[in-house]
Length: 376
Image (cartoon, helix red, strand yellow):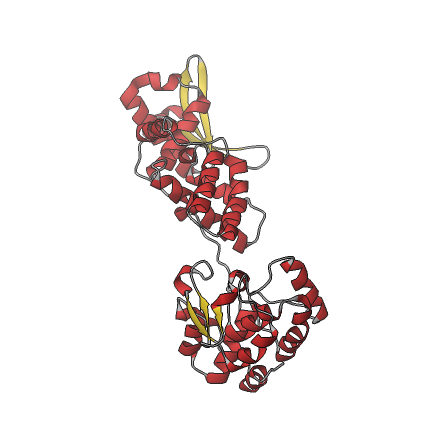
């Protein structure tokens, strides 16, 4: 077939496949001679070439040959932008208007926005640990986009940045959550309209089965804890199921021995899990030895991590499970009584499905009997 015959059968622009010296093949979109030079564009697939050709035909129909006085690089960039915007139902003009509006807005750059979010979290009474986690997680994000405005960061760019983090799936997920909080903060202040973090692909994180201490490990912890001022921490964790952060914030007067309860109130518990925890007879046997005063904190705060590390070494605990004291309480309580709902209530689980999914069949009833028989 001659070139003349081909041109008669195929609409402008000319599309053909070439094989390079490397063996790689590509599709060429040839728009002919403009300003004394032949202009051609290379695409990886026939579909991409056809899409570019269609956009060029539309451009020529609307603007005539003036459309082809653009630099080839600018034409290619315009083609890419139109392709990406099509999936969102937006035109190039709409996207341009949107970008200009956001660039001209009074939104602070990302770095300053992160500082404002952290300041807001602290001023509204969020716990210092929460504030610290927020600041640490968003510090890397601010390092990458600190001078940019949040509204100028596209979904593809955001996705590439998240995928480029050299972290595990769980940490990657935590980063996405914190970035989402930044977007929500910006939305409330009118700085952006959409939370792009919600559109990111979230990694699947395998749920960790709660780790528990064996009866022997629990016994060794109780035996040595008093030397380090941590008997109250260990006993209330093992036999009342308080969370580690709750134990460290618990005021001494919240331990009401005469009333048989520990009051886990505002400022101590997670918001949905405030309430009273009954003092089990095993815990009641240990409390007189815990040195809990009438004021201050139930667990001394000074050098806490150092003392806990020393206790772990003294008790010969090679592996300290995540929330091990609390998870031990839940597992041994359920094994002893066999009522998941009752144990979930004692642990103040907001979602009982979490308990049902994780705590069954972790320990035997015989071990539970030995666990609850631990005494000073």
